[in-house]
Image (tube, rainbow, N blue to C red; front, side, top):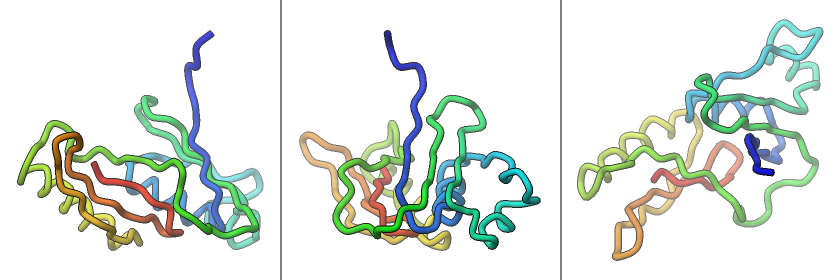
Length: 139
């Protein structure tokens, strides 16, 4: 039997905030707010924002799920997302695409990390962090 679908789960302190960040990064959409609430803002204000989910509107990408946990992030992620904005591009074109996406994400709360330039084995990528410090790469 093969796996047909999967979701990526984020442990975080503020699921609605982190989830909205990733909706903006990936163009994902949230589900309707929990029953009894008119919006996710209402649910979050009432302390019910213990989870948030979003999905790819095309149905191709995995669902993302964000759950509140009591402990904070301590060390580097063992798994991270690569946001592939430079696919098929090389050299200066690839670097320009990475920098443009970085410039779009910083006002959303992302933090720029190290730019790793291409070598014999890897393409250029830009390390970043989301609004709670989870690492991801622009690749």
